[in-house]
Image 1 (cartoon, rainbow, N blue to C red):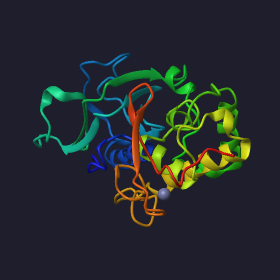
Image 2: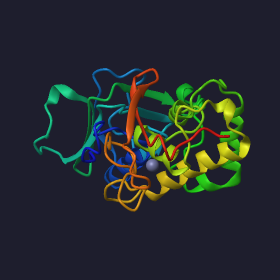
Image 3: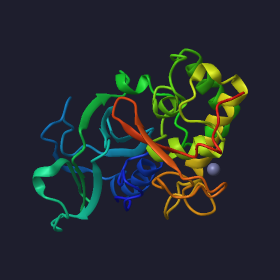
Length: 273
Ligand SMILES: [Zn+2]
C-alpha cells in the first residue's frame, strides 16, 4: 500500500496517497465484522469485537474507518506511517513493535497500520474536532465545483496575509489533501514564486492556484508515479537540474514549521507584478 519513494521525501502521505489506501482497504474491510482490534497508543474509545465496519474513507490526509454505531477511527500517517493489508496469519513486512493499529475482520483480512503518529477514535455524532477545521478535500470529485473553490477562497480570506503561498498550500485548514510534492508542482504550473505572500495574490490568482492543485491531485488518483508535467514532476526532487522550460537550474529551500523542502525555477516562477 506504500508508494515507492518519489523524490527525497519518499513515502510522504499526500491526499492522493490516502485516497488510494482507502480504495485498497475498503473492499477488504467494509461490511465485515471486527474480530481483532489492537491499538497500543489509541486516544479515545476502543471499538468492540463483533462491531461491523461501515466504510473506509479518506478525508484530506486522514484515513477514517467508520464502525457501525457511530464510532470512527482516524489515523494520520504524516511522514512515516503506512497501511498494509494481509491475510490473517500472513507474515508482516514490518516489525510488530511498529504496529499502531491492527484491524482483523471475519473475512480473513488483517489491516495493519505501521508507525502512524496519530491514532484516535471519535464519535461521528459529536464530530471529529480535528476535522471540523479541515478545508475542502481537493481529491474529491466535487473539488473543481465553484462552491468548493469558494469555500477555499473564504478560508484564504481569513488566513494570515503574510503567509507564503507554499505554506498556505500545505495548510490543511485552507484546503486538505495537498502535500509537499504538489505544493512545489502547483507553484511551478502557475508560474508563481512559492515565497509570494498571500497578500500579493488577488482573488483570480488565488483561484488559479487552488484550482490547479485540485486538478493535479485529481489527475493523480490512479495508479502509477505522480505526474504533473509531460516528463513526470517538473521541479520536485530536481535540485540543480535544468528546468524543462528554460534550462535554469532548479532551486530548493527549506521553509515552514517542519523545514519542508520547496523546489522552484527562479526564472519561470515570479511574484505578481
Ligand atoms: Zn524555468
